[in-house]
Length: 489
Image 1 (tube, one colour):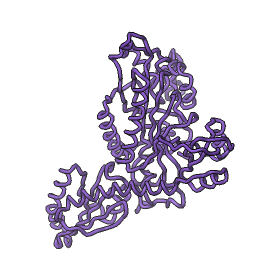
Image 2 (image 1 turned 180 degrees about the vertical axis):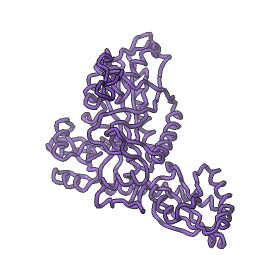
Image 3 (image 1 turned 135 degrees about the vertical axis):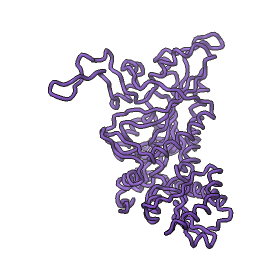
Image 4 (image 1 turned 60 degrees about the vertical axis):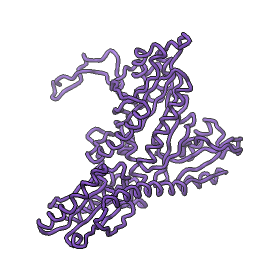
């Protein structure tokens, strides 16, 4: 039975769910709000993780691992931080179960912890308590650590990949001797995220700084990359935070400087999560299923032999063997699907649903004509190509697909980014979807009022933003620059 997808225009939310399900990326688990990432979805995450991990290490970072559980008292030390995460924290209060006289098991009331433990929503507190033991002198700095981990944020309304109670991510936590070094680190990691999003994910992003209302809890500045999804909603794809000395002061992390003075350390943190898979789906996919950029596709090329006799299959395999070998030598992932329990039509639909960038169909007549049929997933176009230099053609085709997917997403974002100078224009533009560039008077109160009236937030103040005098769309007060508003995930 063919898998069906609700058209985007009919129900975008259901379209997204259908793709996640039918492409076998993830499913809901028995634990409310948590997901099971299926092998194909996890393979995409592994591609993301491996690419990012190399980028982190190329910029001097190393991996470490810190505890899942954080003493509750740690959260009390940084007021803004605890306020920002208090409503999302899962708390461990007991450490043992015992048999229930009425059957089953129960929490042992005698096994209550002396201090409750928070299941990490983020790791600043436990890491800065650790860094206090690692740092004594300027010679111990900088510390450039990253960890790949899971975190828990008790979300009430969840959606696979985009917002779940538990998710996978990486979180970098760095310590520096000076404010300038910490800010440079924050900006460097923002650029790493932007490069990854654009070059690997083929998702164009806008780099900017968050407004005070949207900053990470405990940060002095939050830098972000913002992407636009096909339904006209924005998605925050990554953040990099300049934490100043807030956590160093909260956990008494000092170092002896070159001038022999005792000073507080400067800090950053930065992270991206499995939410990127949601961004990937919503940026590129269509009503036929998932569309994957070749750089993140677990399988980049699939070969579907069309045959009736075993001898025909053997001949196809023999002809394709050197092509497969040549593709693998170029680090292109390729599979020849000779599963005889599935018809070729079923395979075509399945690989289209899973977003495999290039599909090759080859049968006995193709062998006679020394050619194959190639279908590209991004445009669904088919071409008949000679066997001669086929591996070079496919290598170039994968590059073309990667670029085309990016350019298509960029064109969409540009078409859905508009200016508004009045409240009426602003609300009309928001209803059309996309980014709205408008003036804001710079106050949190106005930002809150706009959000309450429209459900739109300031996504970012773009880096290197052009200064321009204007009037706030809501209050009419003076403004020095435009900021980007949007409704968002």
